[in-house]
Image 1 (tube, one colour):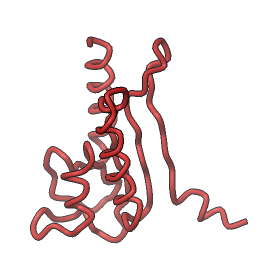
Image 2 (image 1 turned 45 degrees about the vertical axis):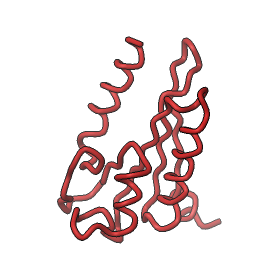
Image 3 (image 1 turned 135 degrees about the vertical axis):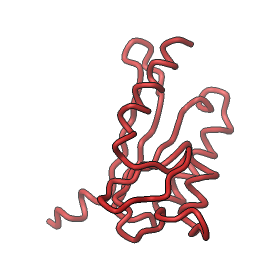
Length: 122
């Protein structure tokens, strides 16, 4: 069994244990390739239904192919992250040009805490 293949893709669901309401979906992959398009697709599908439109969709990656590194000119994967998801977090020692949708991973936990608190206040 190739363990490298097992750990290349990961989906995490964040939900409120009291209400069982899903708060966010976190998709993670080593490289963006097809996964970012799939993540953007699912965000668009979730937005189409009243029951699921509140669910946030994030993408976490070490961005080994450096797709998210620069704002301009934006590569296809960065454009998808900025338009079709709620954001992406990059786990890399190499700096990334950040904005509201593309951030370094060190900001993820704090952003997730803020999201959970805001959902509890609704």
